[in-house]
Length: 119
Image (cartoon, rainbow, N blue to C red; front, side, top):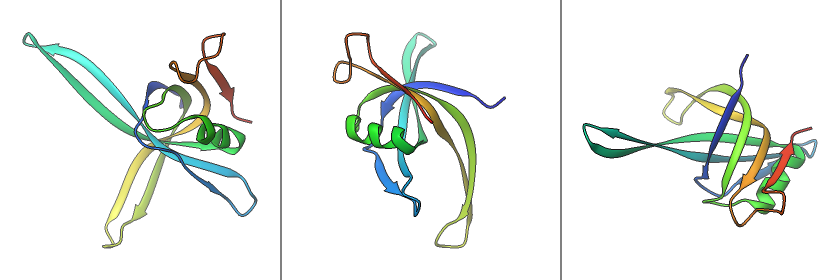
């Protein structure tokens, strides 16, 4: 099973593009911070993870979310490989979003947030 659930803040605005078949694809990153104490000293560690929205969900995310927006996403890990401009092999893991819930005061409804599943 390949399932990821993560809560964080968008690290940048969503880049929205469309395929030739007019399907929306939105790319951004989510910042997740872990706070802990080591030898009595408070520390934080922040991870930045690329995420991708698809279809109607990408359009809605682009319309209502921006850098700093808090949200929860559920999806699966993808492993991507490519060659950079110097011919070096590169790779990364990213999250393909299947569902999201917008969190925080800017996006809240009376029910406590906006939730959407992908098609």
